[in-house]
Image 1 (cartoon, one colour):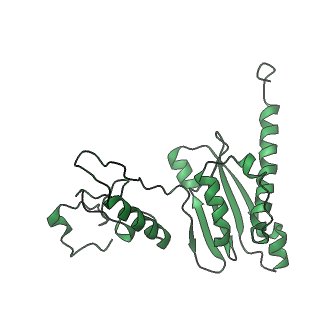
Image 2 (tube, helix red, strand yellow):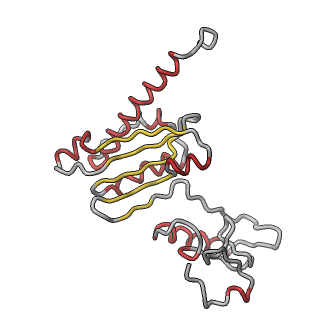
Length: 212
């Protein structure tokens, strides 16, 4: 991070090895009355992240805080924060991916749907990309999604809400959605629903008589 020349070391603001300002979950630096947000801290380098952090840091600045207590400050939460790269097709995502699942030791399952299986993509003559949904196998909650599609960023809001509020994939797959722009997700949900049923049937087939 380009944090040189600001004299942060002279006022006691701690930096990591890459030059990023170190903050706690309240975006508070090592100096309690100084907050940081955006590209100068080691979070996802997206404009949406910076905007979220800027608002949160501003709110937390005006909460009464002592050396040992941070009152009613709000912690940062990136669980359902979407992101997008405006290429063609767009690359979008929300939640964590397989690498992060593995790093955290989360048992996960992936449902990946190529867009050549989506009627809307076929009609638009643009089947580049896919929709990938990632669920926690133990809790059945949707924990991540990755999308490569034309206007893929438009598909992240529903997924963001599902991840943010811990909606199980079985429940998510049952959602009714008549928005034509979300046909990608409807098809992906049906694909996930089919995989979920197959998984449960397979799981039941391996149960012992005592378990069943």
